[in-house]
Amino acid sequence: MANNAYDQMVNDFMAKIIAKNQGEVEFHQAVLEVAETLIPFIEENPKYKAAKILERIAEPERVILFRVAWVDDKGEVQINKGYRIEMNSAIGPYKGGLRFHPTVTLGMLKFLAFEQVLKNSLTTLPMGGGKGGSDFDPKGKSDNEVMRFCQSFMTELFRHIGPNTDVPAGDIGVGGREIGFLFGQYKRLRNEFTGVLTGKGREWGGSLIRPEATGYGEVYFAEEMLKTRGDSMKGKICTVSGSGNVAQYATQKATMLGAKVVTLSDSGGFIYDPDGIDADKLAFVMHLKNVKRGRITEYAEKYGVEYFPGLRPWGIKCDVALPSATQNEINEEEAKTLIANGCFVVSEGANMPSTPEAIAVYQDAEILYGLGKAANAGGVAVSGLEMSQNSLRLSWTREEVDGRLQVIMKDIHAACVKYGKRDDGSVDYIKGANIAGFVKVADAMLAQGVV
Ligand code: NDP
Ligand code: 2IT
Image (cartoon, rainbow, N blue to C red; front, side):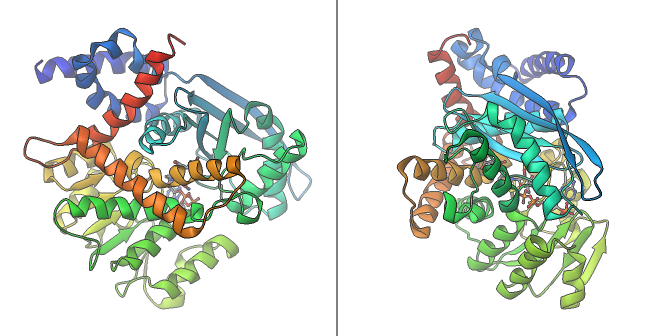
């Protein structure tokens, strides 16, 4: 079929999505990227078309929206919105993180839940897709305020989740501290100790390597992509955005593999350290961000390097870009600058960090572009391993979990190659990841009938 016939089908499909999900711009963006690669594939595989699998996966199985009322340290009542999107359970219980950030909306969480379905399928583990969160802003809140918020949030959420139903985890604004408070409240309400959340502390059901998993996986995926060109991370200059969970461990693994990470950022701006962020400097960042909860500008003061307020790090010359902060953090101009400066690998730790225009720039330049749902799947993969360990009532060693993570990232890469190899031998990772993720979910949905 001619390309313009596919374009027309994508346009018709998207018109319906936009009409049914008005104003949910991030959701439209995520669905469009998938529809562009899946519609030609579905035309070649009419069984998926007849069963309207694409239309069905774009509609959440269930959306839960609730009020979260809590009392701040001044005694004032605060009200936030709480959400859980239970997107797809064809291949396993709903699984995906919780995001606490003031910009959270239904549309943002639907984009994340939609991505999660295909990502979880790619991990090779039996997990459906979901996402949740709140417009609560943990920044500037005391530990007690965060605890009271988490307890109130879980007092509603607990009735909708369970180790065989829906298993939330962390995302932006939700780390070990929040998972602890959420787990404590769930346990109190249900009177049972189960693996209902992942990212737990290692003494109470957590998995070794879960904190590291997303950032490590992002770098393992970059290494796999580089291997296709007979290259490796060794000696590469890397720019990393963000300075939270994913950015920290991407920095650590890149450095362990012989690369040099020269930037980190937060919502205030970025730091540029041309000497590289070594293990000692990273320990400073971890303390600053995970304990003191301070700003990245303090790094510049401590190490006497430049801080660029209000800017993102994509103007700095690099070989490998590891976006690890948030969605749409690389636009067309920034993508062009990256390429002009010689960047030839983008491996996404964040979800949907590149705008569609930025992706078009990467595709034109034929760089190695590992999209989020493949490159950042290591986090949820180790969450899946945490669920397995909880079910077995065993805990595996670091080496065991890291070894499994590496195998999973290699398998995801291989799945992308299987479905995304172009005639010239190069790999379209977008096509590969979307189709590989889709096939497993679609076949399960076909087997389970029209539900
Ligand atoms: P954290 O909350 O630990 O860190 C987020 C980092 O990104 C912070 O440095 C934060 O800066 C910055 N950031 C967040 N929002 C914005 C924004 N709107 N503009 C600029 N900077 C921003 O989150 P994670 O590290 O867990 O998550 C980072 C990304 O990775 C997200 O896209 C998430 O969805 C994705 N991801 C996370 C996984 C996980 O296991 N945690 C798994 C797979 C993907 P500041 O502190 O100033 O807000
Ligand atoms: O986007 C993601 O994959 C995550 N935030 C991790 C989800 C999980 O369940 O570990």
